[in-house]
Length: 79
Image 1: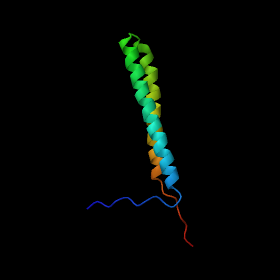
Image 2: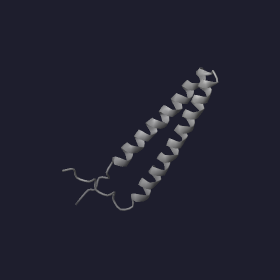
Image 3: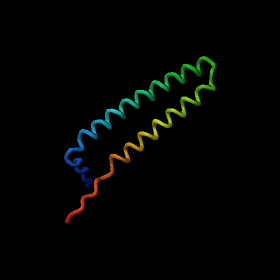
């Protein structure tokens, strides 16, 4: 049986929603970059595609970093 993940701590819901919004925006940018890369490829300019691929890769790495930051749980010291 799989346990569901616990809900985020109080006050962290707006942070999660902001991260989700940024993630959707970045995915839209990646889709646009893919469209521009395909247009450049079909126009016979394959050299420019590598820059777009590098930017898309950086956006992907940023998304992975965001996921890692969101999975962190704050440490609560009990006295």
